[in-house]
Length: 72
Image (cartoon, rainbow, N blue to C red; front, side, top):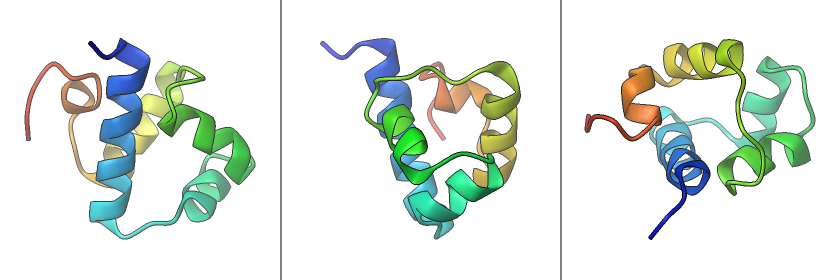
């Protein structure tokens, strides 16, 4: 069974790829390094509220989707 951080990470990765962004591009938007952003997708770090909202808008998905509460 996946942890919530792993589920969010997987959804971030899928959403990013569908939106056509690289990790480096997203990291720049969030003003962090690619390595830091990678840790979100790998379920190591947790997003804060502002990051979560910013990514949901960037990827054009709901926060509920990113948190695993809804499907697209």
